[in-house]
Length: 325
Image (cartoon, rainbow, N blue to C red; front, side, top):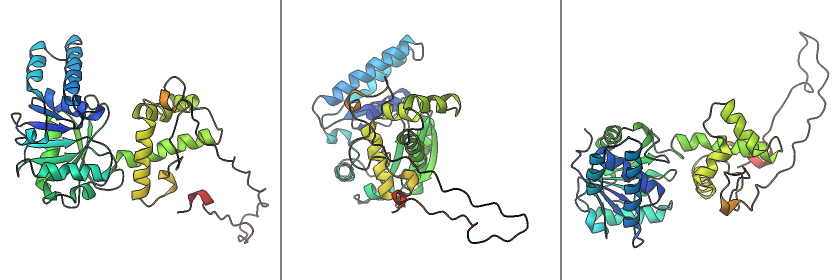
């Protein structure tokens, strides 16, 4: 199964940051692109914003003026879902709510052709659950781009339990044709990146809560010693504390609920006191603190070499109450 032909129209539903980024990727690759949003005027505003970014690419000599003009001509705002009827790929980037996504794909299934590939950009919801609302879930797949989509190469191609191999392969090859680095993965909580990232954020927050270091210091250590481009606090500010909290709760609820993926603040919004990177809408809040860990009791006397261990010399460990399921 090969990638989609460049003459095949691609639609993006949802014109927020991710929707615009995905649309730009498909557009620069050479596809005709349709933009749709339920809010009046949002699709046109998104098209204008993408056009402005194309202008900046020309200014930086990353795109020719002719290619920019051709791309703009291929970008069309859609007034209704029926305008997407001839599309061969529809990628959804709407609100991270299962019921909202399921209803959208129910409507799309009644509009597009049988050979149209349907994809969700969900970062943590179950691809299998979303596709379960379809009559033909075999053509449904996860295409998880990362923000900013035009710059970050990784795309997780997620197969639900009912996804056909041909659909997953077609999505994989299309992402690769767009200059991305696709990775195939199963429909597990958080997929790959967001599953691994939970302990990264949670442990950084735990160090701060334990008063081990301030956020700026933690970020500096991760950057300068750990080799990360951004620290945990900087990255969650960029992603958005509300988005990061939602993803963490989704992974937590869908997984075995281990300590590594547990949300640091189960009730209420997260915030980061990381300084200038902190978002204005969370600057007035702080991360709840927890009691300092108590120093363990004094160690038992060392036993002589060769002597059998006694019950008092054996070390046992039990998870703290906060880790209980």
